[in-house]
Image (cartoon, rainbow, N blue to C red):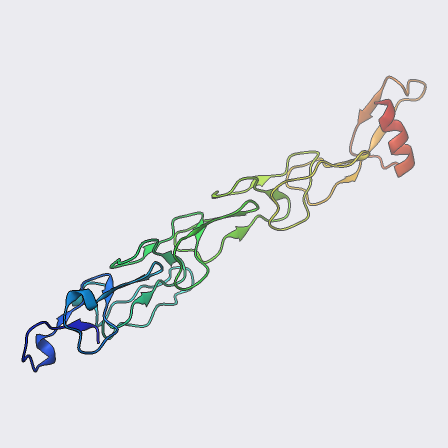
Length: 212
């Protein structure tokens, strides 16, 4: 298997010809190149000289494919690698912000919103931490939640605006807090000032916030 021979009377295995890169020979006694079949997408077949030791290593977790001892079967692309086409001699490593979670992947997937990539050959993307978010796919970082917004979930694609009477006074906040307000006596309607050193009851905060 994995080789063919179109010469009559050949009696030595060494006189048989390996199937070319990107193809494999599943049949014994193959007589022609047409008996070598195409490796499907998500797999590869290296050049003849590399077939006894060929192996790709996944840079994310160190796992590697089994070494190929002959060319009667194609090798599946390891995690973090892919091959979109048939009849290929190698797999391609996933670029930054793309990933391949499964062995034998025919393509690398984009990191979707709420997640990001930091290296090539990733098997999964990283979720944005709490207080951060990423609205777009195929990104290499997350965006800090601005003042007035908060996010308490990992892998969020947005930072929700704080509800009425609530606020954040710094970026990257996980929760909103009760808005603190200082009122100068006698001029409630004209001098509501947002400060950070006085706590009000929620109903009073909401009443005062309506006057702002």
